[in-house]
Length: 334
Image (cartoon, rainbow, N blue to C red; front, side):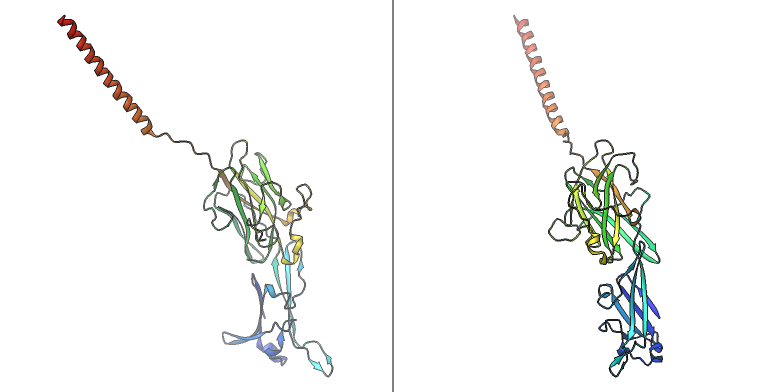
């Protein structure tokens, strides 16, 4: 028997000989929901019975309620044969195989060095499963074109932030708990100024807006694997005016439903803070302020007037010289 725990599916492969021993044909093998049936497959000359279950059909196919703790989620399925019927009674199935897949629940993401790239991302491995969470900044509300270098943004212009679970794709819901800006690349460095943008998943800055700028829920906090929010560019009152953006994130299962979505009634009244051990950290920066354009001095505007002045000066000197010579000739003749 071989079980594959994919990022968006679970499959089981069992040698056909096992079922022949119990005199069970492939047409009688299925999951708890009999509509999720097995099929026969040949691999390298050997025959197997197999069932491939997409994650979005897990519950419909009879998957057991998820078992989870602070670090892992357990998915359980049962492969079984049709129950034998004896007259007007039914006995237990001849074949019944329970199989499980264990996935990491909480992914920790941290970067202990200054980031000077166009995105903040980290590949890491938990129990043989690779995962990636990424934070990027985009040029406008369409979230199509990301910055390809450390961004420089005018005061008052909007900054568009996207945080996304890219691997495994569409497996977890993402909740952004805290986001703040600091003058230093180290998230916990208290030596400079800082400014809180999000607290407990809710806006702490009056310019914050979640989603993609439309009524559609795409990108809202806790409702999918991608969170998008924007805020107005600012600067700190003292140098350096550039800043780094830091966010703590929490991963939820789709079964968590509404509990993953922050309840933000007012700025001062929010839900309880998520436990620190259930969070990972992402950082991005530096984000620089675009300085006002200083008017450039055109050298021609200086050269031309100076040339005219010199020309007029020489012309007047010539006139004065001619006038003096004429006066001397006049005095000599008299």
